[in-house]
Amino acid sequence: MKEILIITGSPRKGGNSDRMAWAFAEGAREKGHAVSFFEAGKKEVLACIGCNTCFTKGQACSFDDDFREMAPLLEKADVVVFCTPLYYYSFPGKMKTALDKIYAFLVGKRDLRGKECLLLACGYGHRENEFDALSLLYDLIWQGLGWKDLGRLLVRKALRLGDIEKTDGLVKAKEMGRRIS
Image 1 (cartoon, rainbow, N blue to C red):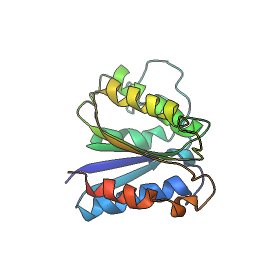
Image 2: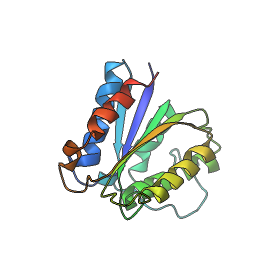
Image 3: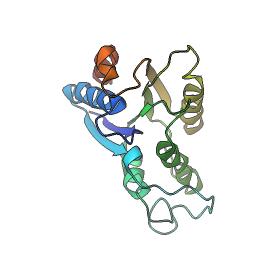
Image 4: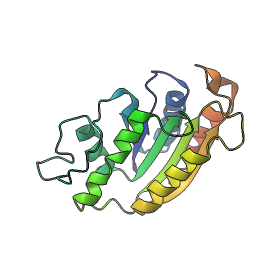
């Protein structure tokens, strides 16, 4: 059994990317994995200011925000899933702010190497290259942290609430959850 952390980016409850996250979680739970969520799009995480006092005051960040919930989940996870809508070619702001704070583990010399990760994303995506910046940022994150990429699912034409139902994105997300071993 693996501990899976799904970090979601949408501020919209029950939106397309939330549904992808739930489908992935369902598939992973069917295989006996434990799944937890950090809904970055619905949390209050302050921007990193580069004070470099991470882990010196009893928590990952010296400032008291919702990253204190994400940090222990991240540390415990074997697999981290980034599940996000595409916002202007990248992660939504609140999710990116939460991801920026992973810097605390580097400053605090907390080793996160050896984890596995996936990217699940959906959005308008009418042009072939619209997910390129998001994919590049994802690649830089997992490579920089020494993680193993288990793949990505990029679903196009899922802009409006419920559009994901008109695609094969939910079926594929659930199958990706089932493939975690």
